[in-house]
Length: 126
Image 1 (cartoon, rainbow, N blue to C red):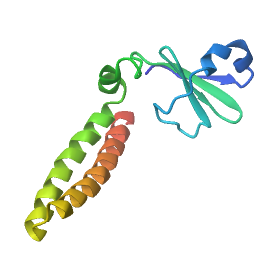
Image 2 (cartoon, rainbow, N blue to C red; image 1 turned 135 degrees about the horizontal axis):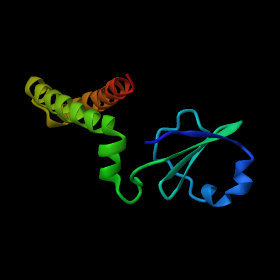
Image 3 (cartoon, rainbow, N blue to C red; image 1 turned 180 degrees about the vertical axis):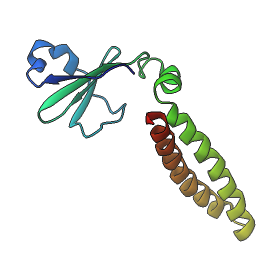
């Protein structure tokens, strides 16, 4: 991700095509809405708009986007998979229930994913 430009809200009238494709992809960072226009990632706030250009569009090249622009998601996935697998095996050993193991694995894996991604993001920012 390159530099992020902060623009006034009235830029909407100059570039209406930017606002035709709302998206859930990307971190909202407090934005009311997010949009994608090619490799542009636009965030709309109450009083301004931010725009940055991604190297890879996550809609067409999701793996390249994650590897190059959101590697914290890979770190989170690795943490989640390892912790979830451990929790599944341990819960299944203790209870003898695959269902209990599955629930434990999902819960611990989800928590580890979020924590791993958060820590990796903070390390990347440092």
